Image (cartoon, rainbow, N blue to C red; front, top):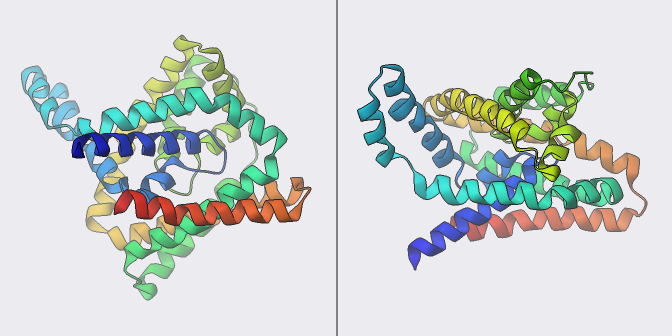
Amino acid sequence: MKNLKEYFLTFLRGIFMGTADAIPGVSGGTIALITGIYERLIYAINNINTLIIKELFQLNIKKAFKNTKKLDFKLFIPLALGIIIALFTFAHIISYLLKNQTAITYAFFFGLILSSAFFVYKHTHNNHLKNIPSLLIGILLAILITGLTKTATAHTNIIIFLSGVIAICAMILPGISGAFILVLLNQYEFILNLIKTLQINKLLIFALGAIIGILSFSKLISYLLKKHKKQTMALLTGLMLGSLRIPFYKITTTYTNIWTTIISAIIGFTIVFILEKKFTS
């Protein structure tokens, strides 16, 4: 029963991460941090590099196959299942909400991200003097990225592949939205339509790029968490605070009722405490 509960909670984390990853301005990495699996996820992904990929490059096929037993499938399987189900199930709902309830939707995630930043910063153990430079760098970096304008790129296979590589790196970083990166690359609506219409061949190209991107990027994140955890968490906090630029802009330019917008933000702010308590207790 304990294992079933753990699998179910991991599956729910995947649902929340997949939903967040589909929304410009919100990162699935943020959800992973809130629910207490971020470091485990990064290390588990990095283990694929050290246990499988490295051996395959050295043509140690037998050893690579044997090492698959050491992978964290208890995390990967329910989490990936939740993410995939969320992306395919909520693609239509998210499109509707972003179009018809823009301010309320972004207000909810504004509250969620702001509250999440406090929880992430706790991992720095409040070492303020050493954290301030990393925090400021994160804020400035996020502001610069979210201030970029959309480029007029095509939807060729190579662009779809590269979009997968770049977007997944952003998705795994709390504060930088992979969906927003897709907006900048002029691929967001296109990829969302691929999901809604189940164009598997194009989605596989995007997924291949995402797999290569996440395996490459996880190595850097794993190193930073091992060697410079406090500064890395401060940087991630800064990224989250800086990324508030996106929902703030959407809210202030689309809201029609200030009170429903504020209430939505409060709900988003409060739900983080519930999630953090539920998933990390």
